[in-house]
Length: 132
Image (spheres, helix red, strand yellow):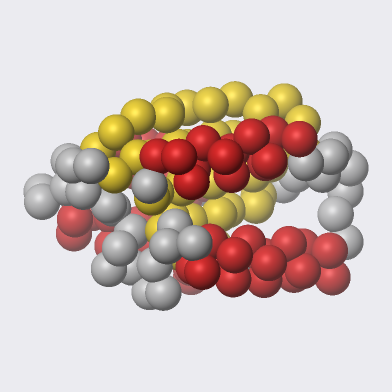
């Protein structure tokens, strides 16, 4: 079984472009090395992240994320087991969504997978406000 955690949060302060780039690079590298799939989206001072992987690994990572001073008001959307990963076949397995094109590609991918991975529909619903 795969475990999935999805949360939203607010940036504690305005992050400069170079800070965001460093955060994105470290997140993508660390998660890929830990066999964690998912996506991270930053939009107008808010984060949305989906993490998938081995339960103990994710729970330890999420505790670390919750202590990160770069964001606050963390709301856990879901923290549960799933039969399959949603993002395993998406790009490198863990993606940073930075542009409208990235968001469009993710939306198309999730729409294609929703019949085989029903949990994709839940993630699509969370992305809806970002797709405007």
